[in-house]
Length: 279
Ligand SMILES: [Zn+2]
Image 1 (cartoon, rainbow, N blue to C red):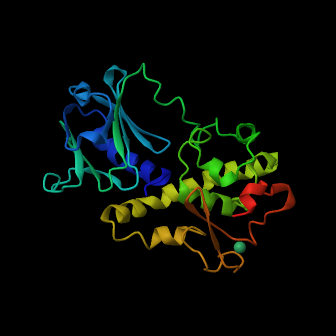
Image 2: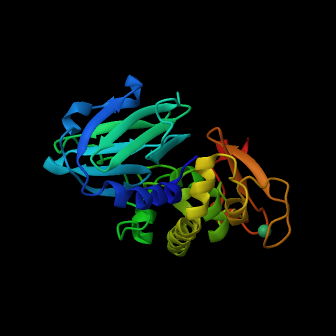
Image 3: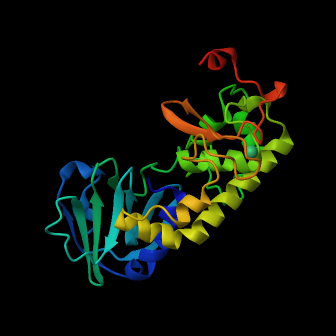
């Protein structure tokens, strides 16, 4: 699944192709992939910039309109994809005077939105992990009153925009925090660590994701560099790369979490609420 580093890489890759280009047509092949707005209102507009917001790709058009993409589980944005008309998984094609951008999505959990300035599309989204708004103070305040597990709150896009399931496990491993730790009990120093490791983990993933992204697009080569990058995710019952203890897999909110019980101890201060312990 494309997460923040992959989405950032895609933005960097398509930005030189799209910035300054004029939209000639938006060909929506699967109507429900257009989640809101009228695709026709994007036609004739210039693409001013391409930026990532959380895991969204935001094409800012003239007139304050945005064309927003989310890749969901299997979405891909392919520049000048020659087989786009024969490929039944291509759901929409953006035709510009500079070339074509195909939105390919096998499982169709992704989407496209045409957003007008008066819409409050971004209001519920928390700060970007790399922005000044995502500070340790902000994190501690956001977690106040939340006894739920820290991993679930890292996935809450209203707290911080862009962290997905893979990187939530990776960040907590690097910060040496147990994924079940009760969020509101985390001390200021722990929040500092989480913020630092969030940025460090995502940054190094962005740096290595040129390769990750190409592998991902070919869909057969996700091993290699990406697998080496991962310290815990997908490594259940394999030895921890730091201490050799076997990595444990648990399920939180129907999704896999991986951690090292030695490197990420659950101390008394960070015990989860009683209901969570029963599982
Ligand atoms: Zn370990």
